[in-house]
Image (cartoon, rainbow, N blue to C red; front, side, top):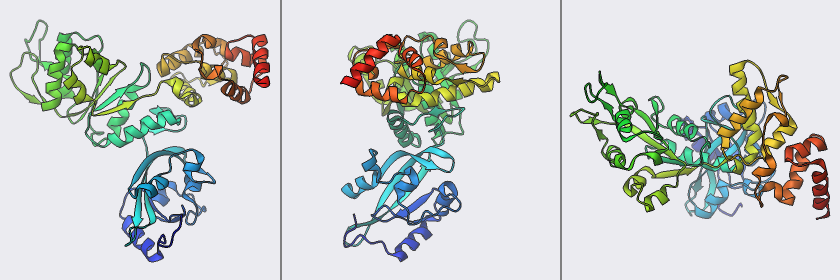
Length: 435
């Protein structure tokens, strides 16, 4: 990429590093050939390895262990994009660090000379603390492209105060994502308050959300603060907001727009102070069209929608999720567990209509049969063949071939994992080989 003006002088690099030393975030300076020219102390402290030089090495070799730029390895390359636009670029990548693979938020800014030619780049790196790219005992876990897209969106919006709307099927981890938004915000020291909107009647919804005064209704023997008041200075998470009664939606809209509310039975106007995160598995746009969800409320809560992928769109995360969930249950029971190769293959073959919640339930059940600490296919109680509709992964010959190559067990175990007889598996293998 070097051109006649694309040279960053040593004196320029030293001046930049002198300036970047005052930054708390890890930062590096690169030339247009991907070479790292210098790094501030924060970078050396967080990403450096003792005895391993970084100056002169390619950025993609340091962060990804690639032998070619990210875009040539099938990933988004912020440098390539910055060259095309002459503007900053930002992306969420998984980097190799001294602690193992981690999600890193990368922001790249071009350095231009007097002729407006790009002569180098400054890259700011921020490790994402509320998600893990390896098995973890808590929080969000995943490294698939689908998961990373959602996490990248979350990382962009978390530090702002914009309302966030989490959209996804039941069991996709919406509360964990909501908590991650809270933890990545300036309100992280404040409370994280969950309101389960499903099943609440109009009366219950109002008293739970706004609180009530003594004597407001039969049984109200004392004043009770509502969840809006409890969330002061923090985040209010309205789970399944699509279930809010239509008659209450106007009061919720007024709360979000003005921050003003009254306790049930009260006359004093109170002022709310929270960041709103809402979630639903329902099709809100269709509900708006059908007049069962207010359009003004929808536009107010959906300033920044984030789609959470179902588990079937992030199958490569299943081994990591299984290890994490088993470790979490082991910490409670004191009994370590692991899944056999055949069981893991079966788990990866299933379509998971209930998503991560269903996976957790299946593992909890299987644990009760695993007296020796190993989960086997027969403990999972899954009908793999029924879960696959025509056109899904195991119906595709190329994917089936890759799946068979990855499988480490016997042919009998492979047939069991795929939910078919050994004879059917033999015929399928012959057909794939002939094709």
